[in-house]
Image 1 (cartoon, rainbow, N blue to C red):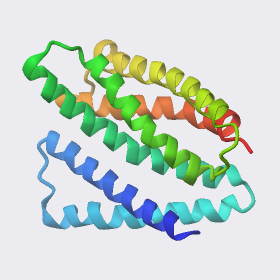
Image 2 (cartoon, helix red, strand yellow; image 1 turned 180 degrees about the horizontal axis):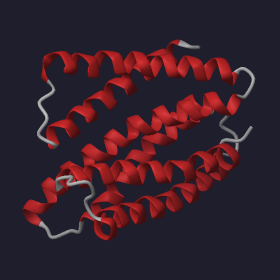
Image 3 (cartoon, rainbow, N blue to C red; image 1 turned 120 degrees about the vertical axis):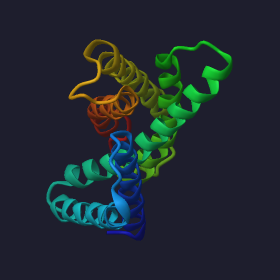
Length: 199
């Protein structure tokens, strides 16, 4: 494994711990100092351990290591997506009547531009610069389809399915952002691996 793999695994694990703490607070659970330390120190180490296992398996089946890195990029970008979405809802609700689905689309597109770099240069390690127009066009097509899947899934989880298991609505909206990102990630991994960043 490279140093960038170690650093990014630790950062992604930390970010997941941060979001997990937010969810627990949304449920009214005070995790206390000890569990807070577990979330912020053990999850990054667990993330690194899982990436190392994927690296070992990836020596025989490369897609496993690529999939693990794609998952870490996705986790990191999902936090950006979620926090930007929350900021946009807060900011635009003060002055404009814009539906959350539109704001979710904006946060998805910003997060996806960051995801492009992470997937191209880290997950799939495609550093070549030839035929960039084709690559960017294919990336945009896969991303736009992913946007439709993401926003459609978000709409389904929030409006059709609605809060489940006595989950408070603000927590369910956050969870819906993450669930929508997971559904879209299945599509984007296949599209990025086999179409956009294939070697």
